[in-house]
Length: 138
Image (cartoon, rainbow, N blue to C red; front, side):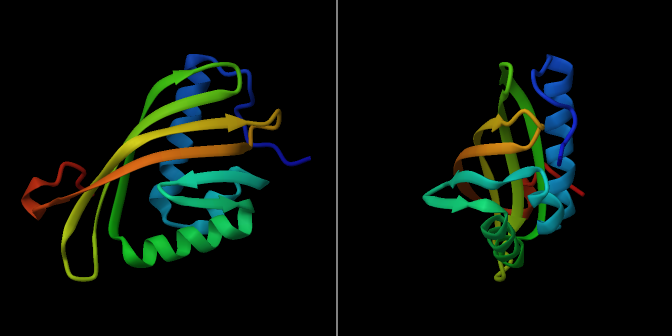
């Protein structure tokens, strides 16, 4: 049986560990690696898109990181319950024309008993910035 530790129920310590693991995976920009943290039938809402299952996650992330250059992400603990975690995040990237953006928002995560995320609901806003305004430097 596929498991992704730490498993619920979460403590503050294990919730923060799960958040750091997610941040590290997303910063790898490896869609396959990221997808392994989710159930095979995971549900996402990402802005105005609805994504279902690992195959769609891999496609979505592949397309995302082809468009979002020099992507770097920071996630922060907001709250948790037994099998849910809420995070605040921001990330920066530039498009193919060199315009930098900072995206920020909140995510609500729900995990199954094996520690795989079965639901991810993200509310995200993008702000055009000058390169000199970047906060997240690699």
